[in-house]
View (cartoon, rainbow, N blue to C red):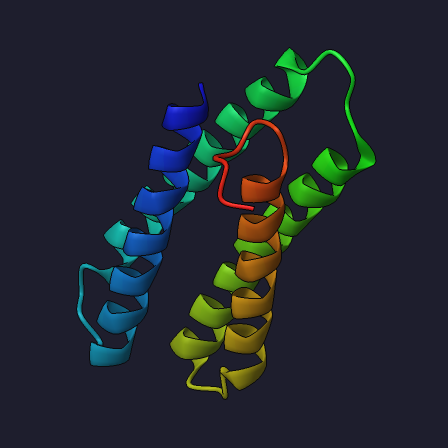
Length: 117
């Protein structure tokens, strides 16, 4: 299940970057990409919840990682909404980067992650 989760959030990040570039260009298919992106939000959430459900003793750090993952998704939506409206996106991008770094760090540090830290 870990590989499915990693694959889903990698695809989510790629789709997010594609959606942002399409919204900036004013491409007509940007709405379709955003809908597929939202589907991958759900897939990422579902695989993450399955991983959480499979843990016998859940450390508070896993809950913190889950909250940071939700923060990543929220920041993605903030950036896309601001881009659509033509508003400034610096705060959304900053939040997205911080939340992504926190989530990746916790994900790699915890026992279900890889042995990088």
